[in-house]
Image (cartoon, rainbow, N blue to C red; front, top):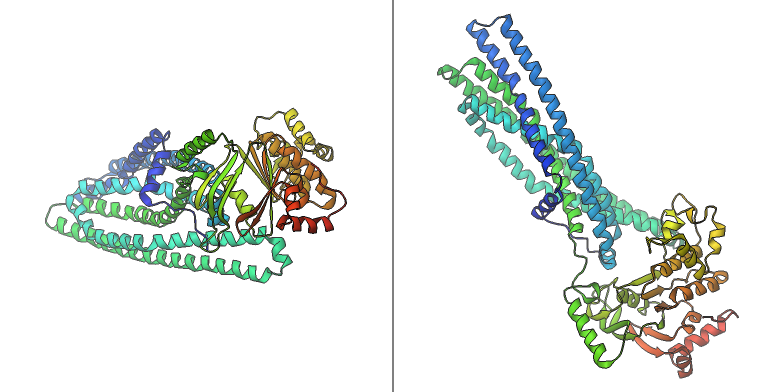
Amino acid sequence: MTHGLPVSEGRQTWREVWRTSRGHRLRLLLVVVLGIASAAAGLVAPAAIGYLVDRVHDGTGDLSTLLRVVAAMIAAAIAGAAGSALTTVLAARTYHAILARLRERLVERAMALPQHTIERAGTGDLVSRTSDDVAQIADAAPSIIPAFTTTGFTIAVTLAGMTALDPWFGLALIAVLPVYGVTMRWYLRTAPRIYQAERAAMSDRAQQLLESQRGYDTVVGFGLGRRRHERVLEASWQVVRYSLRARTVQNMFFGRLNLAEYLGMAAILLAGFWLIDAGLSTVGAATTAMLLFLRLFGPINHLLFVVDVLQSVAASLNRMIGVILAPVAEGSPAMGGPDADENERDATARRDASGERAAVRLRGAVFGYDEGRRALDGVDLTIEPGRRVAVVGASGAGKTTLAAVIAGIHPPDAGTVERPERTAVISQEVHVFAGTLRENLTLAAPGAEDSEIEAALEATGSSGLLALLPAGLDTRLGSGGRELTAAQAQQIALARVVLADPELAILDEATAESGSAEAGLLDRAADAALAGRTGIVIAHRLSQAAACDRVLVMAEGRIIEDGAHDELVASGGVYARLWEAWAATAEPAGPGR
């Protein structure tokens, strides 16, 4: 079961959007002023037609009256169109500027989230939020921006104009308000959860697609194609089901809006008939009122339609803001939570009192991926600065979990973990980013000069890689560029470690995928990457363990043996048996350090 990334609540979301709008608020004020002015210009045409009707009805209208009315309508139309266009442009620029900043903050926070948070939520959830949700908000701009600029102002100014024309015309619209109110209440109670479910279904679909793509070799190797196809198909149909429910709600919404329009027209006609019959108004005023109300049909429907779009946008915004506001630290000492400083002070006191220095210290560390078996079960461990420690054991013994907890990728469920601030982790799954070789290497040290980059490649025995690349450091790698072998990608990763110069380097089977011809090369590169710093090696080959100062043997989440290679071999325990089996099958080339 995955635990999705957090989703913020409405007030929290809009508060964060308002905070992000800093630097754009003067432009927002200008949008309001221009919007009201251009909407007010739209009142001229109905008022001018009503005036003309009264003049004709009184017998005082002539050609000059008609020309004045036409001229006023043309001038108002030009002014209104220009004002609306300028309002829309300013609003669009502000909208997209705020959205761009939100996306930047989303990516910044996503990159800072603990890896275990992303893993438990599923990378598809994060990908969906940074792609589908952002696209949903951006694609809604053509509907939202006019609705909350020209359309919104038109409704407000027109209603004010009808009331100023005669309060009875304004009161006549009260008959319509209950229908609009009931419709909106029903919609707001029904639509959000459907749109939220639709977004969640899209996240699940993205997760299934990503897992199928990333695990393609496993899918093919184990004949899982049909099963994965069924999982993707099921997730896709779930999206379809929620999308159809959303469209059904939308159609019911529009049907009720049409009813409100008919009631509004009837109310204006009845009010006009009564006022004219009582001598309280004129035919021209009633005509103006009806034209104003008819003028509201489009804007009201547009605005309420945008409320429909806005629900979907709000659901996407809630998911984006949920990531932006997600805590980077989750309260554990390993992740720098609220108790981290206190624990660090206690640890420093212990070191001072005992005279013992430690680069890494675990006390009673416990971690489990679920409520079942513990992957780490009360581990105590101290690693002195500059020491190189190998961790060996059967698959599932807890080696990778130990590395992840020490690195801070997973906070312990119980116990404490201390490690250097500058810690680097290299696993067997190394990613080559789309970009030049230089850009790939300087990810670890943005200010590194070419001479430093070349020195790091030389130190790890990777300088020969430059000769193989047509443009040297400027050769484009990854998607759209030169594809590297697994061993070459590992060489780049190990050179990054040298450039980053961490206090602690953790190699989690970082050379496991090398072939026999490449094993020695990568082992020498790993040796150079660990030189002069504390190192933890999750050993795939026992020759790597033999080259370390100390070896830890793990089983069922515990450290069952701890000592130097020669000591453990001589003790005749688990490691000795592993070494005997390894030595019997290993190639003649022995371990080298």
